Length: 77
Picture 1 (cartoon, rainbow, N blue to C red):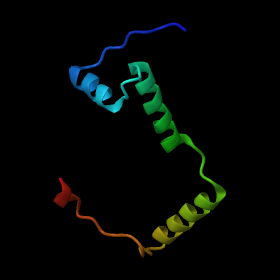
Picture 2 (tube, rainbow, N blue to C red):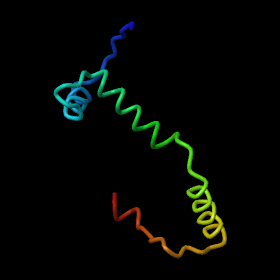
Picture 3 (cartoon, rainbow, N blue to C red):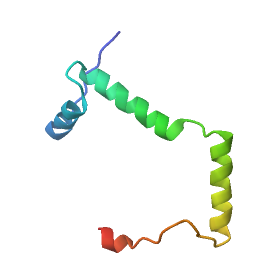
Picture 4 (tube, rainbow, N blue to C red):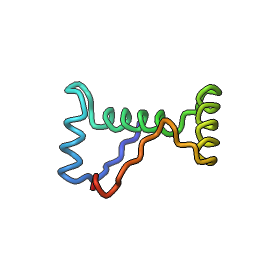
């Protein structure tokens, strides 16, 4: 397989090293991180999950915020 060189800051290099296992290469670590990211953001929802979220959206659109909490964004800065 062809290899490419990428440049990262010392800070990113250190973080990658801490995320990896001793047996993993940086390629392994980055591949694992990409896999997790794709699973989190690109996997399709099950029909059951989609129904739940669509129902919650309908509630929000109708002003029904039961089951949610109000957060003061200024307080968490």
